[in-house]
Amino acid sequence: MRKLSMDELNRKTIAEFIDAKKFPISVILENIRSAYNVGSVFRTADSFLIESMIITGYTATPPHKEIKKTALGAEDSVQWKYMKDTSEAIGFFRAQNYRVFAVEQASESLSLEQFNFGENEKISFIFGNEVSGVDEKTISLCDGCIEIPQFGVKHSLNVSVAAGIVLWQAVSSYILKLSANKI
Image (tube, rainbow, N blue to C red; front, top):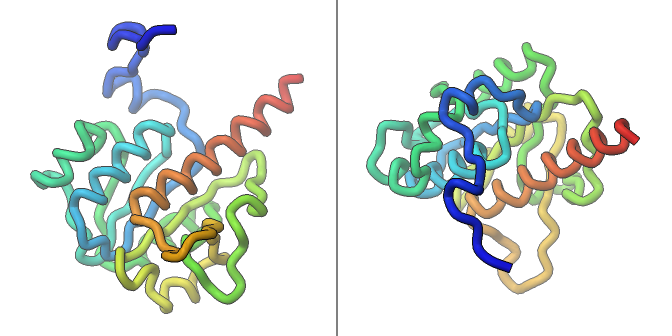
């Protein structure tokens, strides 16, 4: 076994990424304090061929030094836009037939491993502030809440880590459904 070289990784160019068929998954970032976290979510969104991202509230937007440092160029490949209010972002995705879910510990949240992604379903996930999470008003506008099961003392994850877990679960669910249909 050996590490692959950069050439062997078959990375897409930005143009190839933009033209590539994406997974029907989008992200809304609501009032994220750390621009480093924003950059990390951009990088994860690029890695998993996520369709788009909307940045809301006081969340930093590109161009930004801290986003650039952690995104490593993904802010140029992932389609994104800024909207002042999260409700506007939810409306934008709903108009395109997305189901919208807050990633939050809530009274009727569904555990991530139990969440069933439909084969052709479009999903948008909202990730909230590092301290206060997704705003209660925002939650009331969603189709539901998804919760990442946690078993330790803290019961909280960094927002960029949470985004990585949720987005991978969603993408892997789509991959499994696509594979099952080819058999």
